[in-house]
Image 1: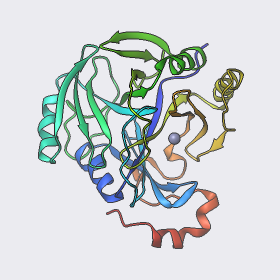
Image 2: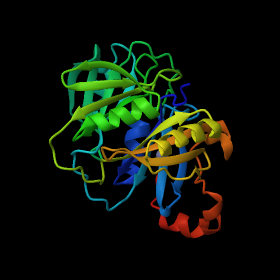
Image 3: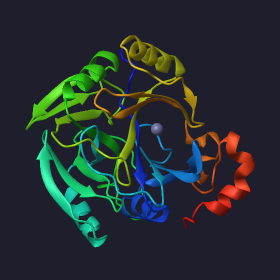
Image 4: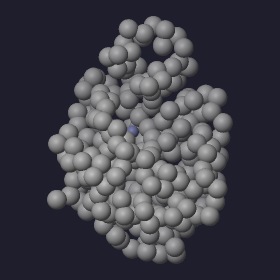
Length: 307
Ligand code: ZN
C-alpha cells in the first residue's frame, strides 16, 4: 500500500528576507502563507509560500540567514526545484523574469518545455510546462491564471551515485521508476499529487556546500500520523536513522538523511496553515510556536522588517 503521496514542500536557504519575499510573492506570484520563525533558531524567519492555503505540494519555504555565504552546487543535494506552470506559459515567464532582471534558459525534458532560472538568492529553479496539472493556482501580483504557478512539480537530485537513493525511494517510499532520458532517471510518486517527480542525476562534482541558494531539505507528503509511522517503520527497518516525529505546528515531520546525502522529511498533510490564523489572513502576522511565544517582543525587535 502506498503511503507517500508526492512532495509536501521544499525548504531552501536564502540571504535577505525582504528580497526573498519580493521575488516569491511579487515576481512569481505565490501566496505568502506563513510568517514564522525557524523553530530551532527563532532569531531567523521561516517564510512559507504556496497556493491559497499552502496545500501540500504547493509549498516553498525559506530560512533567510542574512549573512549566509553562498552555497556551492555539487553532489548530494537538490540541484533544481521544479515548479509547474500550464502548457505554453514559459514565453510569458521569460519576459516577466527578464523584466525582473533575471536570465532564463529554455530546455526540454521528458516531453515538457522548461525555463531554467536562478532566483535572486542563487536557488536553481525550473518552470516546467506540465500537461496534466489541474491544481487551482493562487493569483497574486497580477499573474494571469493562464500562466500562474500551480505548485511544485518535482525536484532534481544531483548525486555521486544515484542507485542507493533510487532504491530507498522505490523500496521504502513508494516511488515508481519512470522515464529515463539524457542521463536523467525520473521517479514518480504513484498517486495523490501533481507534485510527484524526483529526478536523479549522477555527478562527478565535489560534495555540495550548504549556503544561500541551497535547498536545505525536501519533504514528502503522507496523509496523517499513522501513515507517517508506517513509512518511518519501513525506513528504520531498512537501516536508516530517522528522527522521532516532531510537531511543526502546521504538520508533523520526521527527518532522514538519504544515502546520497540529501536530507529528506516525511510530513503529514494536516493540520495545515489555518491552524493559527484564518485563511483570509494567512501570512499577515508573525506566528510563533508555543515554546517561543514568551519571546515575542524580543524576536520581533531582532527580526528584520519585511514590508
Ligand atoms: Zn520541512
